Amino acid sequence: MASPAKRSRRHFLSASAASIASLALLGPLSRQLAASSQERRSQGVHVFSKHLQWLDYQPMAQTAAQIGFDGVDLTVRPGGHVSPDRVEEDLPRAVEAVRQVGIRVEMMTTAVTDPRDPRTRAILKTAGRLGVRYYRMGYYRYDPAKSVPAALDEIRPQLRDLAAMNEHYGVAGSYQNHAGNGYVGAPLWDLYQLLKDCDRRWIGCQYDIRHATVEGGTAWPTTLRLLAPHINTLVAKDFLWTHAQDRWKLMNCPLGDGMVDFEKYFSVLDRQKIAAPFSLHLEYPLGGAEHGRKQLTIDDRRVMDAMRKDLSMLRMWLKQRSS
Image (tube, helix red, strand yellow):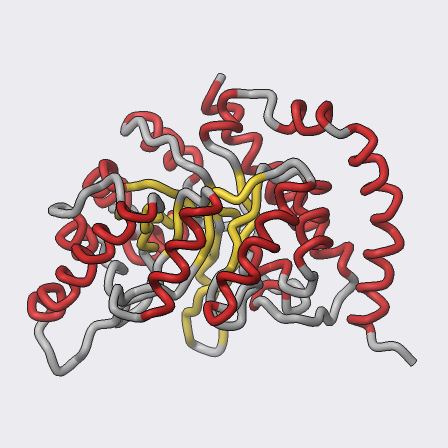
């Protein structure tokens, strides 16, 4: 008997055939409708391909287009859609699959932190040649044996050299503020200290409002203002604090169901005149899709329905912002 994941995959391939045929028939018209507003062109919403790693390039791209995304934020990292060791062969294939269905690849997510790593040059060179505009970097961690200022001093030369490499290949780095003890950038003020002397055209911040709210509580608007000149991409996701067995813990949830104050968030973005592409993340339980699993334990339709719901919510906020 076929596994649930294999049945789910077969169901997707058969159920999507008619939709793909319709998409192909619509051709330029469907693409024109998908990019009909200036808001969507300048602030497109891209699905984080981590959540579609149960699909190969072509069905991944078709799914993203059917759901209504403007593009795909491709995972180009160990365990991702594209392995760094095969970036020169596989990244062009992945990008072409996305472009064939009328959407784009402006963003990708990598583990890049060290300009001396030979894979870094291959990744940036290939991305630049393909017209990818932004890549999310990997993370730096604090060494408990070193002071915070000393740790930041060690990172600065790497960012300086990465910025120079980015300029050479025409692709901008984007460092995500990730919540959690030990993450450089979690407090956000430290990320400002690293970025303030960098060329903001070639290296900046991927501002994640979920992580900023976790770490900043009600103070996140201040750090957003601090980093505003350096923000080049954005992340949308939500969370709740829950209490169970005498402990507080974080629980990720669909957009609008959690503690992130999106109304205030978009208000601050407007005041700071921040217009950047969004990467939509779905980190709540979705049968393994939330973790980038290659096989699902739930019907794929539930994953796609969750994506449609979160995308619709984000589109609503963006429409209200532009009206």
